[in-house]
Image 1 (cartoon, helix red, strand yellow):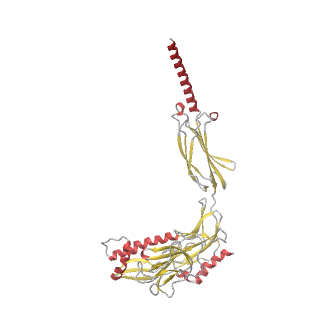
Image 2 (cartoon, helix red, strand yellow):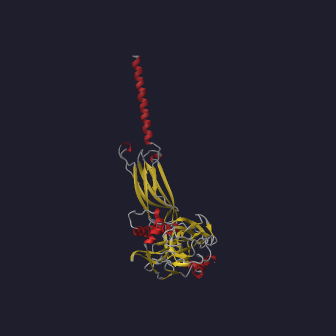
Image 3 (spheres, one colour):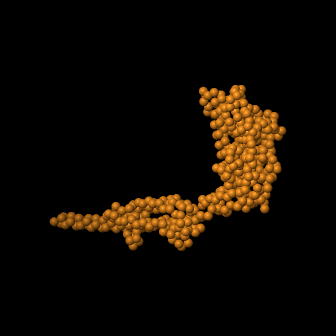
Length: 455
Protein backbone atom coordinates (compact mmCIF):
# COMPACT_ATOMS: atom_id res chain seq x y z
CA UNK A 1 0.00 0.00 0.00
CA UNK A 2 2.80 2.35 0.98
CA UNK A 3 4.58 1.56 -2.24
CA UNK A 4 1.46 2.40 -4.33
CA UNK A 5 1.17 5.81 -2.65
CA UNK A 6 4.77 6.62 -3.49
CA UNK A 7 4.23 5.74 -7.14
CA UNK A 8 1.11 7.92 -7.25
CA UNK A 9 2.94 10.86 -5.73
CA UNK A 10 5.78 10.36 -8.22
CA UNK A 11 3.35 10.47 -11.16
CA UNK A 12 1.72 13.61 -9.79
CA UNK A 13 5.12 15.28 -9.43
CA UNK A 14 6.09 14.26 -12.95
CA UNK A 15 2.77 15.57 -14.28
CA UNK A 16 3.21 18.89 -12.51
CA UNK A 17 6.76 19.25 -13.76
CA UNK A 18 5.68 18.41 -17.30
CA UNK A 19 2.85 20.87 -17.09
CA UNK A 20 5.05 23.60 -15.77
CA UNK A 21 7.59 22.79 -18.51
CA UNK A 22 4.89 22.93 -21.18
CA UNK A 23 3.64 26.24 -19.87
CA UNK A 24 7.20 27.54 -19.81
CA UNK A 25 7.79 26.36 -23.35
CA UNK A 26 4.51 27.93 -24.48
CA UNK A 27 5.29 31.26 -22.84
CA UNK A 28 8.82 31.23 -24.23
CA UNK A 29 7.37 30.64 -27.68
CA UNK A 30 4.76 33.37 -27.71
CA UNK A 31 7.05 35.85 -25.92
CA UNK A 32 10.19 34.97 -27.92
CA UNK A 33 12.69 37.81 -28.28
CA UNK A 34 14.34 37.23 -31.66
CA UNK A 35 13.63 40.27 -33.90
CA UNK A 36 12.83 39.83 -37.61
CA UNK A 37 15.57 40.09 -40.24
CA UNK A 38 15.69 42.97 -42.73
CA UNK A 39 17.83 43.25 -45.89
CA UNK A 40 17.68 46.23 -48.26
CA UNK A 41 19.55 46.36 -51.59
CA UNK A 42 21.15 48.34 -53.12
CA UNK A 43 22.42 51.01 -50.72
CA UNK A 44 23.32 54.01 -52.91
CA UNK A 45 25.06 56.99 -51.42
CA UNK A 46 23.12 59.32 -53.69
CA UNK A 47 19.53 59.43 -54.93
CA UNK A 48 19.40 61.27 -58.25
CA UNK A 49 16.49 59.66 -60.06
CA UNK A 50 14.15 56.71 -59.99
CA UNK A 51 15.87 54.06 -57.89
CA UNK A 52 14.54 50.57 -57.24
CA UNK A 53 15.14 48.91 -53.87
CA UNK A 54 14.64 45.25 -53.01
CA UNK A 55 13.48 44.63 -49.43
CA UNK A 56 13.62 41.15 -47.91
CA UNK A 57 12.21 40.49 -44.42
CA UNK A 58 11.85 37.28 -42.46
CA UNK A 59 10.95 35.80 -39.07
CA UNK A 60 11.36 32.06 -38.48
CA UNK A 61 9.62 32.02 -35.08
CA UNK A 62 6.25 33.81 -34.71
CA UNK A 63 6.13 35.07 -38.28
CA UNK A 64 5.81 38.50 -39.82
CA UNK A 65 3.15 40.92 -38.58
CA UNK A 66 3.75 44.29 -40.23
CA UNK A 67 6.15 46.03 -42.62
CA UNK A 68 6.37 49.82 -42.95
CA UNK A 69 8.73 51.59 -45.37
CA UNK A 70 9.14 55.37 -45.20
CA UNK A 71 11.45 58.14 -46.32
CA UNK A 72 12.15 60.94 -43.84
CA UNK A 73 13.61 64.32 -44.76
CA UNK A 74 13.86 67.26 -42.37
CA UNK A 75 10.98 66.00 -40.25
CA UNK A 76 8.73 65.25 -43.24
CA UNK A 77 7.73 61.61 -43.56
CA UNK A 78 6.76 60.06 -46.88
CA UNK A 79 5.03 56.69 -46.73
CA UNK A 80 6.29 54.22 -49.34
CA UNK A 81 4.72 50.92 -48.27
CA UNK A 82 2.64 49.63 -45.35
CA UNK A 83 1.75 45.96 -45.33
CA UNK A 84 0.16 43.77 -42.64
CA UNK A 85 0.51 39.99 -42.64
CA UNK A 86 -2.52 37.95 -41.39
CA UNK A 87 -2.27 35.42 -38.55
CA UNK A 88 -2.90 31.85 -39.80
CA UNK A 89 -3.05 28.52 -38.01
CA UNK A 90 -2.05 27.48 -34.51
CA UNK A 91 0.68 29.82 -33.25
CA UNK A 92 0.74 31.35 -36.79
CA UNK A 93 2.51 28.33 -38.22
CA UNK A 94 0.75 28.88 -41.55
CA UNK A 95 1.45 32.63 -41.45
CA UNK A 96 3.98 34.63 -43.50
CA UNK A 97 7.52 33.94 -42.37
CA UNK A 98 9.37 35.54 -45.29
CA UNK A 99 8.55 38.30 -47.73
CA UNK A 100 10.29 40.10 -50.58
CA UNK A 101 9.17 43.21 -52.40
CA UNK A 102 10.54 45.93 -54.66
CA UNK A 103 9.86 49.62 -54.21
CA UNK A 104 10.87 52.54 -56.40
CA UNK A 105 11.87 55.93 -55.05
CA UNK A 106 11.71 58.94 -57.35
CA UNK A 107 12.88 62.11 -55.57
CA UNK A 108 11.04 64.38 -58.01
CA UNK A 109 7.70 62.59 -57.70
CA UNK A 110 8.13 62.52 -53.92
CA UNK A 111 8.98 66.25 -53.89
CA UNK A 112 12.19 65.62 -51.99
CA UNK A 113 14.53 68.56 -51.56
CA UNK A 114 18.25 68.52 -52.34
CA UNK A 115 20.15 67.14 -49.37
CA UNK A 116 19.97 64.29 -46.92
CA UNK A 117 17.06 61.83 -46.85
CA UNK A 118 16.73 58.67 -44.76
CA UNK A 119 15.12 55.44 -45.88
CA UNK A 120 13.52 53.39 -43.08
CA UNK A 121 12.24 49.82 -43.15
CA UNK A 122 10.42 48.77 -39.95
CA UNK A 123 9.16 45.23 -39.44
CA UNK A 124 7.30 43.64 -36.49
CA UNK A 125 6.64 39.97 -35.69
CA UNK A 126 3.78 38.22 -33.82
CA UNK A 127 5.66 37.84 -30.56
CA UNK A 128 3.64 39.02 -27.53
CA UNK A 129 6.54 41.13 -26.31
CA UNK A 130 6.39 44.93 -25.93
CA UNK A 131 2.79 44.84 -24.77
CA UNK A 132 1.73 42.65 -27.62
CA UNK A 133 3.32 44.81 -30.34
CA UNK A 134 6.01 42.20 -30.99
CA UNK A 135 9.73 42.40 -31.72
CA UNK A 136 10.72 45.32 -33.91
CA UNK A 137 13.60 45.59 -36.38
CA UNK A 138 14.50 48.98 -37.82
CA UNK A 139 16.71 49.38 -40.89
CA UNK A 140 17.97 52.88 -41.70
CA UNK A 141 19.89 54.02 -44.77
CA UNK A 142 21.10 57.60 -45.19
CA UNK A 143 21.26 59.08 -48.69
CA UNK A 144 21.93 62.41 -50.35
CA UNK A 145 19.26 63.61 -52.76
CA UNK A 146 20.97 65.22 -55.72
CA UNK A 147 19.00 65.68 -58.92
CA UNK A 148 20.88 68.69 -60.30
CA UNK A 149 23.31 67.99 -63.18
CA UNK A 150 26.82 69.44 -62.98
CA UNK A 151 27.45 72.83 -64.57
CA UNK A 152 29.98 73.38 -67.39
CA UNK A 153 31.34 76.72 -68.55
CA UNK A 154 33.88 76.89 -71.39
CA UNK A 155 36.87 79.20 -70.80
CA UNK A 156 38.92 78.74 -73.97
CA UNK A 157 37.62 80.37 -77.15
CA UNK A 158 39.17 79.34 -80.43
CA UNK A 159 39.17 75.64 -81.24
CA UNK A 160 40.51 74.97 -84.72
CA UNK A 161 41.41 71.31 -85.19
CA UNK A 162 42.79 69.49 -88.19
CA UNK A 163 41.36 66.16 -89.25
CA UNK A 164 43.73 63.68 -87.61
CA UNK A 165 44.98 66.41 -85.26
CA UNK A 166 44.80 67.44 -81.62
CA UNK A 167 42.51 69.90 -79.88
CA UNK A 168 42.52 71.38 -76.38
CA UNK A 169 39.57 72.84 -74.49
CA UNK A 170 39.72 74.48 -71.05
CA UNK A 171 36.54 74.78 -68.99
CA UNK A 172 35.13 75.12 -65.49
CA UNK A 173 32.84 72.59 -63.82
CA UNK A 174 30.78 72.73 -60.63
CA UNK A 175 32.42 71.44 -57.45
CA UNK A 176 30.33 68.25 -57.33
CA UNK A 177 31.66 67.03 -60.70
CA UNK A 178 33.22 63.60 -60.48
CA UNK A 179 34.21 63.00 -64.12
CA UNK A 180 34.24 65.03 -67.32
CA UNK A 181 35.71 65.13 -70.79
CA UNK A 182 35.05 65.53 -74.50
CA UNK A 183 33.11 63.25 -76.83
CA UNK A 184 33.96 63.13 -80.50
CA UNK A 185 31.11 61.01 -81.82
CA UNK A 186 31.58 57.82 -79.76
CA UNK A 187 35.20 58.51 -78.83
CA UNK A 188 35.60 59.68 -75.22
CA UNK A 189 38.58 61.76 -74.09
CA UNK A 190 38.85 62.27 -70.31
CA UNK A 191 39.70 65.65 -68.84
CA UNK A 192 42.28 66.31 -66.14
CA UNK A 193 42.57 68.88 -63.34
CA UNK A 194 44.37 71.97 -64.56
CA UNK A 195 47.11 71.64 -61.94
CA UNK A 196 47.97 72.06 -58.28
CA UNK A 197 48.25 75.83 -58.42
CA UNK A 198 45.00 76.30 -60.30
CA UNK A 199 41.37 76.24 -59.38
CA UNK A 200 40.39 72.59 -58.86
CA UNK A 201 37.17 73.20 -60.74
CA UNK A 202 39.07 74.10 -63.91
CA UNK A 203 39.58 71.15 -66.24
CA UNK A 204 41.54 70.75 -69.44
CA UNK A 205 40.96 68.12 -72.05
CA UNK A 206 43.15 67.13 -74.98
CA UNK A 207 41.07 65.44 -77.65
CA UNK A 208 41.64 64.05 -81.12
CA UNK A 209 39.72 64.24 -84.35
CA UNK A 210 40.38 60.71 -85.66
CA UNK A 211 41.82 60.65 -89.16
CA UNK A 212 39.29 58.12 -90.46
CA UNK A 213 36.14 60.21 -89.87
CA UNK A 214 34.24 60.58 -93.12
CA UNK A 215 31.53 62.99 -91.91
CA UNK A 216 31.69 66.10 -89.76
CA UNK A 217 31.70 64.79 -86.18
CA UNK A 218 29.66 65.79 -83.16
CA UNK A 219 32.01 67.27 -80.55
CA UNK A 220 30.75 68.22 -77.10
CA UNK A 221 31.68 68.41 -73.43
CA UNK A 222 30.29 65.86 -70.99
CA UNK A 223 30.27 65.79 -67.18
CA UNK A 224 28.97 63.49 -64.46
CA UNK A 225 28.65 64.20 -60.74
CA UNK A 226 28.98 61.80 -57.81
CA UNK A 227 25.23 61.19 -57.81
CA UNK A 228 25.33 60.06 -61.44
CA UNK A 229 23.68 63.17 -62.90
CA UNK A 230 25.01 63.96 -66.37
CA UNK A 231 25.18 67.11 -68.44
CA UNK A 232 26.53 68.11 -71.84
CA UNK A 233 27.64 71.42 -73.29
CA UNK A 234 28.71 72.53 -76.73
CA UNK A 235 31.63 74.80 -77.55
CA UNK A 236 32.76 76.59 -80.68
CA UNK A 237 35.03 74.49 -82.86
CA UNK A 238 35.99 74.17 -86.48
CA UNK A 239 37.53 71.10 -88.07
CA UNK A 240 39.82 71.66 -91.03
CA UNK A 241 39.57 69.00 -93.69
CA UNK A 242 42.74 67.25 -94.71
CA UNK A 243 43.52 65.10 -97.71
CA UNK A 244 45.82 62.22 -96.90
CA UNK A 245 48.33 60.82 -99.35
CA UNK A 246 47.78 57.47 -101.06
CA UNK A 247 50.94 55.38 -101.01
CA UNK A 248 51.64 52.25 -103.05
CA UNK A 249 53.47 49.51 -101.15
CA UNK A 250 54.93 46.75 -103.31
CA UNK A 251 55.33 43.46 -101.48
CA UNK A 252 58.04 41.25 -102.92
CA UNK A 253 58.89 37.65 -102.14
CA UNK A 254 62.30 38.84 -100.99
CA UNK A 255 60.65 41.18 -98.47
CA UNK A 256 58.41 38.39 -97.13
CA UNK A 257 61.38 36.03 -96.68
CA UNK A 258 63.20 38.78 -94.78
CA UNK A 259 60.44 39.89 -92.35
CA UNK A 260 58.39 36.75 -91.63
CA UNK A 261 61.00 34.99 -89.41
CA UNK A 262 60.71 37.85 -86.91
CA UNK A 263 57.09 36.86 -86.22
CA UNK A 264 57.83 33.34 -85.02
CA UNK A 265 56.18 34.37 -81.73
CA UNK A 266 52.83 34.92 -83.47
CA UNK A 267 50.60 31.89 -84.22
CA UNK A 268 50.44 31.38 -87.96
CA UNK A 269 49.16 28.50 -90.06
CA UNK A 270 52.18 26.46 -91.11
CA UNK A 271 50.44 25.54 -94.35
CA UNK A 272 49.68 29.17 -95.25
CA UNK A 273 51.60 30.84 -98.04
CA UNK A 274 54.08 33.63 -97.18
CA UNK A 275 51.57 36.18 -98.50
CA UNK A 276 48.75 34.75 -96.36
CA UNK A 277 50.99 34.92 -93.32
CA UNK A 278 51.91 38.52 -94.10
CA UNK A 279 48.27 39.52 -94.50
CA UNK A 280 47.31 37.97 -91.17
CA UNK A 281 50.12 39.89 -89.49
CA UNK A 282 49.35 43.13 -91.30
CA UNK A 283 45.64 42.93 -90.46
CA UNK A 284 45.02 40.94 -87.29
CA UNK A 285 48.21 41.68 -85.37
CA UNK A 286 47.99 45.36 -86.33
CA UNK A 287 44.48 45.53 -84.80
CA UNK A 288 45.69 43.89 -81.57
CA UNK A 289 48.58 46.35 -81.38
CA UNK A 290 46.20 49.28 -81.86
CA UNK A 291 44.06 48.02 -78.98
CA UNK A 292 47.18 47.71 -76.84
CA UNK A 293 48.08 51.34 -77.56
CA UNK A 294 44.50 52.33 -76.73
CA UNK A 295 44.77 50.65 -73.34
CA UNK A 296 48.09 52.35 -72.59
CA UNK A 297 46.45 55.67 -73.35
CA UNK A 298 43.96 55.17 -70.52
CA UNK A 299 46.74 55.09 -67.92
CA UNK A 300 48.20 58.52 -68.43
CA UNK A 301 49.53 60.59 -65.52
CA UNK A 302 46.95 63.25 -64.49
CA UNK A 303 49.70 65.86 -64.26
CA UNK A 304 51.39 67.61 -67.17
CA UNK A 305 54.95 66.32 -67.57
CA UNK A 306 56.04 67.96 -70.85
CA UNK A 307 57.13 71.49 -71.68
CA UNK A 308 57.76 73.40 -74.90
CA UNK A 309 58.12 72.26 -78.49
CA UNK A 310 58.67 68.55 -79.03
CA UNK A 311 61.84 67.40 -80.79
CA UNK A 312 62.43 64.82 -83.50
CA UNK A 313 65.19 62.49 -84.64
CA UNK A 314 68.12 64.63 -85.79
CA UNK A 315 69.25 64.72 -89.41
CA UNK A 316 66.42 62.41 -90.43
CA UNK A 317 64.37 62.41 -93.59
CA UNK A 318 60.63 61.78 -93.51
CA UNK A 319 59.97 58.54 -95.38
CA UNK A 320 56.25 58.19 -94.65
CA UNK A 321 53.61 60.56 -93.31
CA UNK A 322 50.86 60.27 -90.76
CA UNK A 323 47.59 59.13 -92.28
CA UNK A 324 49.10 57.73 -95.48
CA UNK A 325 46.52 55.44 -97.11
CA UNK A 326 48.71 52.50 -97.97
CA UNK A 327 47.77 50.17 -100.80
CA UNK A 328 49.65 46.87 -100.69
CA UNK A 329 50.42 45.18 -104.02
CA UNK A 330 51.77 41.69 -104.59
CA UNK A 331 52.84 40.77 -108.11
CA UNK A 332 50.91 43.79 -109.39
CA UNK A 333 47.65 42.91 -107.63
CA UNK A 334 46.25 44.88 -104.68
CA UNK A 335 46.00 42.59 -101.63
CA UNK A 336 45.45 44.89 -98.65
CA UNK A 337 44.75 48.43 -97.44
CA UNK A 338 45.97 49.93 -94.18
CA UNK A 339 46.60 53.41 -92.74
CA UNK A 340 49.99 54.58 -91.51
CA UNK A 341 49.54 55.98 -87.99
CA UNK A 342 52.85 57.77 -87.47
CA UNK A 343 55.81 59.34 -89.23
CA UNK A 344 58.73 57.26 -90.50
CA UNK A 345 62.11 58.95 -90.04
CA UNK A 346 65.32 57.59 -91.53
CA UNK A 347 68.87 58.60 -90.70
CA UNK A 348 72.03 56.51 -90.45
CA UNK A 349 71.54 52.95 -89.17
CA UNK A 350 71.17 52.55 -85.42
CA UNK A 351 70.85 56.28 -84.77
CA UNK A 352 70.29 57.41 -81.19
CA UNK A 353 66.57 58.09 -80.64
CA UNK A 354 65.73 61.04 -78.34
CA UNK A 355 62.61 61.39 -76.18
CA UNK A 356 60.44 64.03 -77.84
CA UNK A 357 59.69 65.67 -74.49
CA UNK A 358 59.76 65.08 -70.74
CA UNK A 359 57.77 62.13 -69.44
CA UNK A 360 57.72 58.68 -67.92
CA UNK A 361 58.27 55.33 -69.64
CA UNK A 362 55.09 53.23 -69.63
CA UNK A 363 56.12 50.60 -72.20
CA UNK A 364 59.47 49.24 -73.33
CA UNK A 365 59.14 45.90 -75.08
CA UNK A 366 58.14 44.16 -78.29
CA UNK A 367 54.89 45.45 -79.83
CA UNK A 368 53.85 43.19 -82.70
CA UNK A 369 54.23 44.80 -86.12
CA UNK A 370 55.99 47.78 -84.53
CA UNK A 371 58.86 45.67 -83.24
CA UNK A 372 60.82 46.91 -80.25
CA UNK A 373 58.86 49.89 -78.98
CA UNK A 374 59.12 52.53 -76.27
CA UNK A 375 56.11 54.57 -75.14
CA UNK A 376 56.59 57.78 -73.15
CA UNK A 377 53.70 59.22 -71.13
CA UNK A 378 53.79 63.02 -71.15
CA UNK A 379 50.77 63.33 -68.86
CA UNK A 380 47.11 64.32 -69.24
CA UNK A 381 46.50 61.83 -72.04
CA UNK A 382 49.50 62.70 -74.24
CA UNK A 383 51.92 59.93 -75.19
CA UNK A 384 54.63 59.37 -77.79
CA UNK A 385 55.88 56.06 -79.18
CA UNK A 386 59.16 55.01 -80.83
CA UNK A 387 59.11 51.80 -82.86
CA UNK A 388 61.23 49.39 -84.94
CA UNK A 389 64.11 49.97 -82.50
CA UNK A 390 67.21 47.79 -82.65
CA UNK A 391 67.94 48.58 -79.01
CA UNK A 392 65.95 49.81 -76.00
CA UNK A 393 67.84 51.89 -73.43
CA UNK A 394 65.05 52.56 -70.91
CA UNK A 395 62.72 50.58 -68.66
CA UNK A 396 59.13 51.01 -67.53
CA UNK A 397 58.96 53.53 -64.72
CA UNK A 398 61.99 55.55 -65.81
CA UNK A 399 61.63 59.31 -66.02
CA UNK A 400 63.11 60.93 -69.11
CA UNK A 401 63.90 64.49 -70.12
CA UNK A 402 63.53 65.95 -73.58
CA UNK A 403 66.45 64.63 -75.64
CA UNK A 404 67.30 61.66 -73.42
CA UNK A 405 68.12 58.57 -75.48
CA UNK A 406 65.41 55.90 -75.32
CA UNK A 407 66.96 53.52 -77.87
CA UNK A 408 68.42 53.15 -81.35
CA UNK A 409 66.71 52.97 -84.74
CA UNK A 410 66.35 49.56 -86.33
CA UNK A 411 64.26 47.28 -88.49
CA UNK A 412 62.41 45.09 -85.97
CA UNK A 413 58.78 44.28 -86.63
CA UNK A 414 57.22 44.90 -90.01
CA UNK A 415 60.00 47.14 -91.29
CA UNK A 416 61.78 46.92 -94.62
CA UNK A 417 64.79 48.95 -93.51
CA UNK A 418 66.40 50.76 -90.58
CA UNK A 419 64.20 53.69 -89.50
CA UNK A 420 62.16 55.14 -86.63
CA UNK A 421 58.38 55.00 -86.59
CA UNK A 422 57.40 57.94 -84.38
CA UNK A 423 53.81 58.42 -83.23
CA UNK A 424 51.82 60.62 -80.88
CA UNK A 425 48.64 59.57 -79.08
CA UNK A 426 45.86 61.43 -77.29
CA UNK A 427 44.17 59.09 -74.81
CA UNK A 428 45.23 56.17 -76.98
CA UNK A 429 44.13 57.67 -80.32
CA UNK A 430 46.91 58.36 -82.84
CA UNK A 431 47.25 61.97 -84.00
CA UNK A 432 49.53 63.81 -86.41
CA UNK A 433 52.97 64.16 -84.73
CA UNK A 434 53.98 67.02 -87.03
CA UNK A 435 51.78 69.42 -85.06
CA UNK A 436 53.81 68.80 -81.91
CA UNK A 437 57.07 69.63 -83.71
CA UNK A 438 55.65 73.03 -84.71
CA UNK A 439 56.33 75.75 -82.10
CA UNK A 440 53.80 78.09 -83.74
CA UNK A 441 51.08 75.45 -83.63
CA UNK A 442 51.81 74.72 -79.96
CA UNK A 443 51.71 78.45 -79.12
CA UNK A 444 48.43 79.10 -80.94
CA UNK A 445 46.56 75.92 -80.00
CA UNK A 446 48.03 74.84 -76.67
CA UNK A 447 50.10 77.45 -74.83
CA UNK A 448 47.60 80.30 -75.25
CA UNK A 449 44.89 78.15 -73.68
CA UNK A 450 47.14 76.95 -70.85
CA UNK A 451 47.86 80.62 -70.11
CA UNK A 452 44.21 80.91 -69.00
CA UNK A 453 45.15 78.85 -65.97
CA UNK A 454 47.50 81.54 -64.74
CA UNK A 455 44.89 84.31 -64.74
